[in-house]
Amino acid sequence: MDTNHHIWRVWVNALHRWGIQNLVASFLEEAGPFSLIGAQVIYVGQPILRGILPAQHISAMTKMLEDDSQREEFVMFLLEETS
Image (tube, rainbow, N blue to C red):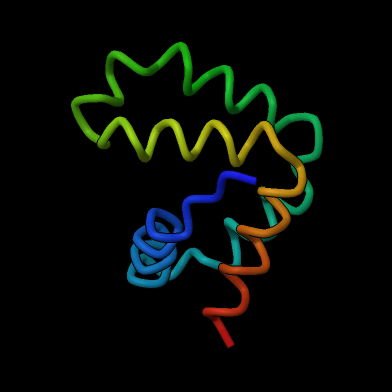
């Protein structure tokens, strides 16, 4: 499985700085099929997002949202860093 732990680490650090790590973890745990819609929104928004995020981050985000096991792994990674 292609995981992007080095990119996830950047996200986890940012989420901790902003103090929203638990909110994001809860959202991702409960998102279920809606995460696929989120991935599609990111695909559509790529032209705008490329000005804000590196292409690797956009790709990693869509893969994580589309793949249930990666999403669960990211949530565990995020919560592990919280404790």
